[in-house]
Length: 292
Ligand code: ATP
Image (cartoon, rainbow, N blue to C red; front, side, top):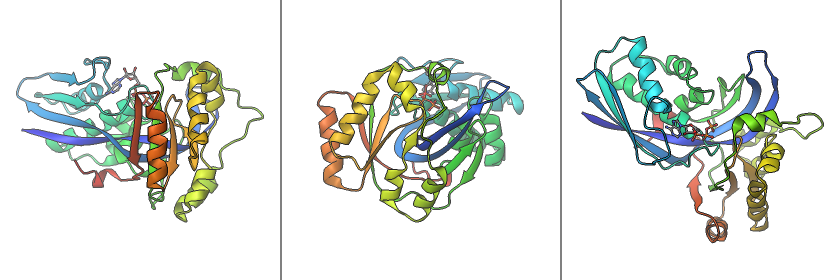
């Protein structure tokens, strides 16, 4: 039996780093939401006792380093499952982009195998297993719109999805290492996201308020290491985006707009000189509502 599970990307509407912890992780505060740009995870149960993995993009590891593989492995080990699974990842989310591509694949495998192996685990239990793989996996297990604190695993959900709009995502080929960016963060004397204001804007369905509060403290560090990311942000602003910010540690930058014409203009403006540009909807969809 084969089943397909949807694994949507996330974007950061705000991202604040509050400091470094003794365990090496950074304490963050960020508002995240799901967008309609998704990988599809095909799961097929096997009688043999192994995990097989295939990905339709050559540069994504198709081995134990894949986050989806790790999710299957953790469940198999924890519940002493003696059969196996074949995982095929149909990848649409750009890789190493700040969109939680690997984390969302892992989360979809956790949700999928929980059903297919009849494990009966709650989303909370799946999120706690997922945290062993990465800090964004717990959010990806649930989906929706949430403020994430701690290292990303302490989630407070915002019950209203953000006002519906277009999201124009643009990823330059710049390879930015999250570790290097954390290493060069200068947090003193810089403007910080208004997290409370962002939550309020979402709850009030205040689109302009949401756009005004898009902010990411990692931008200066990423822009210094990869100036082309800043160039894309400037272009989007020039093309008239209502709000523009970088997602995660980059290099993806996104703009929001409610206007169909503006979304088209931004897309066409960027597509002229870069490859990975996407126009999707902001969803804020919870995993219960993910459609295949
Ligand atoms: P985040 O936003 O959570 O920091 P990201 O979107 O920046 O993540 P990913 O696309 O998850 O980055 O890729 C980060 C690294 O993880 C890459 O080096 C990639 O090779 C590896 N990786 C492992 N599993 C996957 C997967 N299923 N999909 C994509 N990348 C994966």
